Length: 613
Image 1: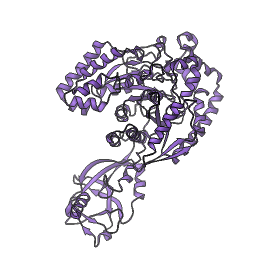
Image 2: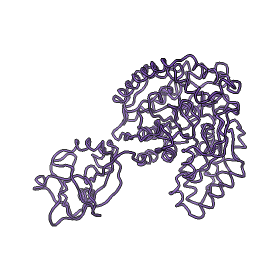
Image 3: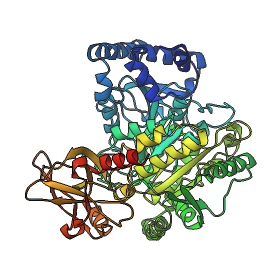
Image 4: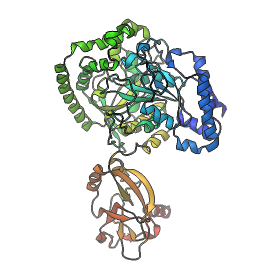
């Protein structure tokens, strides 16, 4: 392994999945060597509060050596087959791992499951190496990372400050390079606030996109599993592995995915911000937004957050608090002393709500959800600070409920309104602490948010566009009915009208040719320039086409954008199959230039370009 790459493993900083796999492909790194370096870094940093439990080092090394043998046997091909091969990951300790105790940061609650959570099973099947269980705010109740009998998890940059919660250990493990990625959970911001406080990415998927089977719930109707990673691209790779319908989870659902935004994004910003007197966070936010305003592909609009903040009040000042009591069973009555005092005080509030209160709150929430739906007709993405302030641990210990409530100001409404979100680092504060921003969109906007977040991360960190391009090409698999459409000219990838396909959520699945039964013509007086494809009885040739797959629900939108003399009919491909595709009225090619001999529109354009120079 190259000296600079080796030193990266010895530094307490996030690790890059792509770089690690590149080193494995080049024979410079093996899973066993990676694991040993992470264990050595763990011992050197001496941050025991991050972990609640880990398998014995000997067991971990034995598993890594098994992966070494597989890599030696199969070579780099195993990295293509198993996208997370050899990468150590951590799991928040309210998520089951077979044979490992699940405590939810409450030793009296602990049990040892026989079965892993679906997400964990999928990660291990993708080649990832389980490292251990991480600390959390007890029963996932808190955004601070201090409510645990295993100790307050200190911030990765400055140990005097909170790490954020409730997924505190998972976030800090990733931020310090003790795990390549980690699973957290998110009900009120637990997958986003810790990411913002520790300078990493926190991906909170749409509810139901990732199975919650094997999760100790906080609020079962709102909970999500979340992903922590060093970059948007790495978080998306992990999400691609763990997402998908799970019939063992009644809340799992098939979500139509909203497409990326190839022509630019309408960004909503808070018309009035709140930082609770934290000038450094306010300055960092202003600097971050200022840096992003230079991107001409984005327009910014101020929006009224009041209805969203009103929805957020329902989470802790409404009957949803009762779900937290359901999760801990009879423990609040029978063993109250086993529960953290602050957590106990929060959950005890359930006694002040009735069934009538629940229905009244549901009526209000329905109204807030309708408002959110209208909001996302006016904007594509909402961009907010991840957290308004970053308190010291001592400040949280002095006023645990008040300081915690402040941290959820921009996060508490998201799951209540059935939204997706991703938290990324913004520009740091003047004191060197990380500051984060969060992109929020409707359910199903996960890929859209990730592509845009990678673009913003690229702008803020001054990196290349490679991650954005990679993400744009890696959407989640379709979970709805689709249709194949063959394109021949201005809708080809990179051509002027390709955006129409992208905005319909289409994906290129093949570069192929038609059957040898077609002629291709350069149509006159079209803007942008377009060809016309016509089927002929004789004298036809094979013409290059791309086949794109798109949701059937979007097909009508595409057809409405196709103007005469073009239309969509049925094309025969070289393998004898038929797909929908662009055709041309025969009358339009009378007098047009026959360009069939070029074999395709791109070759014709290239020939014309060479002739012009």
